Image 1 (cartoon, rainbow, N blue to C red):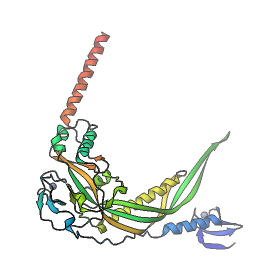
Image 2 (cartoon, rainbow, N blue to C red):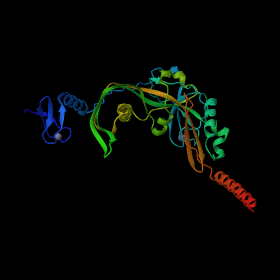
Image 3 (spheres, rainbow, N blue to C red):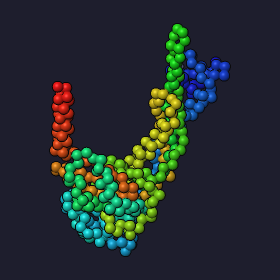
Image 4 (cartoon, rainbow, N blue to C red):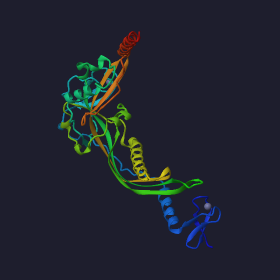
Length: 358
Ligand SMILES: [Zn+2]
Ligand SMILES: [Zn+2]
């Protein structure tokens, strides 16, 4: 019997030896077809390498021709937010803190985006979306229903980095299949152990990563998705009547988050293909990105800040779909009034029942 050093027993790790047409483990007495071992070896090799994340370098571009639109810089005296926007914009409440009105200053240059998704939901429609959303919030304080307050919402183009790449990945898993049966005397359970290999390629386009520190990441991810089919080459005219935030998280700083998003989406797509197995545990994961492209884009968001009991409640409304994101507080006094009423009704019912019983 010839020893094959490159093949180790997947059950116990001892070297396998040829025995007839199969490979045999002298240590645990299992046998494996040669072809299966070859496939397993190739799979582990494919999934065992180092992951590579290859992104092109992003070179920021400036506005070459500021004639395309008259831009101004706006700053918030309260939270310090620095925003670029249309020069003709009137008094606008700071979209990030809602505390004060932004102050117009000299345009000091900003980086020109590559793409923009223009606002599709206008202010009236955004206000209606918010009003329809808060109808589901129980015991909502009146401050949130004030038309005057809701009207303060500001249309902001939020900076996002868009990542495109091709992802080629391989993952190995441990998995099981359990079968049970019975005869007249015994119940039987058989567990088959598998090594699974999943390998393939997925193309990703427009993976967004929020490019602003002021906009909360979880928040901005909640306001997605956007339909990127509506993205157009940037033109300053789209900013007319809106604010545009400048990115303060660079493309390089955003790469790690893009890597995580692409990697997690790939893993989850591969995991979805292991459905007929049980106890599936990933072992090795190798993910390679290629043709990684980065673009700077502006996405439309309506921002609304409402203060209640010394706390700021921020709402973001997707300027393309009207999706509303935000948490509503509960007015405790309204809640107690409600429960007091229920208790009173219950009491009345109890009395009625008592009377009936008498
Ligand atoms: Zn063995
Ligand atoms: Zn502010």
